[in-house]
Image (cartoon, rainbow, N blue to C red; front, side, top):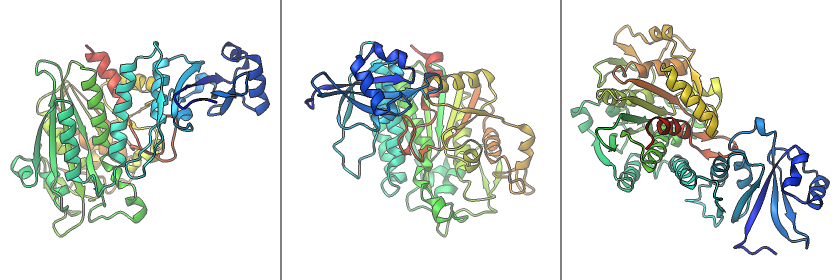
Length: 452
């Protein structure tokens, strides 16, 4: 019998039988065929040695050319506690190891579990990269999965304070009425109805002489919809409305851990969109940091308001690159589903880099157009701009991106990711629940540009 301390091998096998004999004996191949195992994606079958003792698993990877890069995550999601080693048809050991780690994730803060799945790293694996990107994803997932009574604006700030200390980042916090004094009126307006004050957290790391890269993340810790209140089903997952901020933090971890040569700034507007007597209203006109007066068409489109003030601040330094991540629109999900975030960017070189990196890391994005003719749909009769398009019920993700772009003009490049930050049923490398979107794609681009 296998001891608990023994390493269990996982033989990754495609649906091409003629390749199996490189890794297995004829007796084992015959056994697999007898069980009906054919290498179909996701199949997991135990194997025994000559004495009949279990010692390994066969895992089906199907057609390799059609696989998700994170397919090994399907294996780790099914396994029991032990230490494992990957064998067989593995073309990219580092990516396979990362996929295995990502699939083994579970959120057990409030439902204790002793399950522990470990991977034995071979010499062909870039262990530092695997650990770096595993932790980046888990930072995002843990924050998104946290319940809103724990991770309100106060709790989120506590987590950010810990993050800043661990990563030796400078941190500045502007909260409550101080937001008005320092000219962040829309962040204040969106969050003022909550018992926990709205705030803007400004984190920085790196040398001032290095290229300026600024990350902005939507941090709505819970979204009731405000006075335009959501129905019960629509509110159920709104603890994840800070998924943009969570993913930005995961990305920041990867950047810092890899010691990329950037002057990194992270801007996170943190609010709860609650309901009370002082909640902002549909029909209000809010001033913004940029100076534009914004007519409020719907209080449930609050994320773009807090992002607009943060983006205006980011743009004031004319950085090389601004990237924002936000769980922004249901329209993005209707267009592309929960698993494929739209990328809005008019820098073609940056777009191609991000699409290529996303495809490589199993973190795919889809380029969507900043279609300028739709910008006029944001016109208001009584203010400089409306933050939604009340008479134009189409292209909601595009018009939201166009609204945000109004607040960025000085940065050399700007990209907006409208992410979902949730895996509804679980995928390879992305178990059901809060998840990472866009971290690895963006990290790889920054690494290629600013790597040591």
